[in-house]
Length: 452
Image (cartoon, rainbow, N blue to C red; front, side):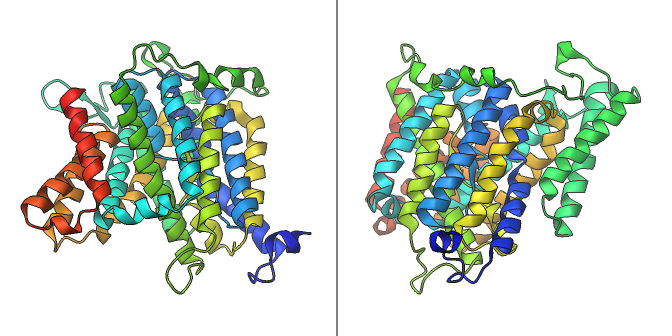
């Protein structure tokens, strides 16, 4: 049955190889189970409910990818997109998280329609390659910045806005957390360089364990008033009743105080980032697995995009930010994955993880910070592929990268990148290379600044 369903022999693989590769993929991306609840809970969402939603969305999306496209790609709520959801839409713009979930749900529906046609592929081809890479790099720096804050390495300062933590003055809280985060980052980097599978997850767990040891020794001290809680997990069953706190809540969003233009801008930002994150990941991982055809195109890309789109809307209903294809799928491909069977294994491991919710939600921010900082590094490497010899290409990408962390908003970075690309190239006499879609996006973003 497995042979008929996944064509193992045709893809030169075996059941054993696919199973082991599926486990490898899960290990490399399981950090999302610790990071996503932490990030989205900042918007007011229940952490346990978010974790359950994360597991279910990952299960549904990864299984859909396996059965619809037969590719070894795993899906989960995307890094960067969850940061935009929590820190820009909810905390920055002040919108209720239910409104943000509705934007994600609508985004998924739009992608379902676009994926059933060739529109999504056409849109991807219309956006300048260098700007795509700038978006990826900018998100990487933004995520790393959030990680530095979560580690308490970077703190507020009245005179310079930001500075490093006062290790001596707040040693038993911020100080020790910052040191532990740095140790965790070193562990993560060394393991990753040495080729250990699941280096990011091991880094999170090692940092957490060191924190618990410090708490037992009295080095780390609980200060609940300032957000420093006990580092020991509650050994209890997952409270499945909490799932109702996020399930279906997108349909209960209150739009009475929501500006329609702001909502459209949020929706477009989700669309833009998710589109290039997904398609870029699909092509990148497929290239590593030698799955592209003679024309450098990915066979069965339409069902793969459709699976990703369905996962986004379903995930919003469950109660999590945009579900997308993970670049960590390349770890499974490196371990030999060539079919959807490995994705089935990864998907069921996410489903099993639901029962360990109390453990994942107890992981402190300074323990997940090394993961954010290191994932930021992996994403910022896209800057190496930007063509700096053509300044009309490089400068808009640079402005996009610069704006995201400094303005604390992925949306602002994208807007500035698109607007500057159109303006610079038109003034420099290179308007012919600008696609009609880029003009449309630029006008929309300019209207956002004028009328919002």
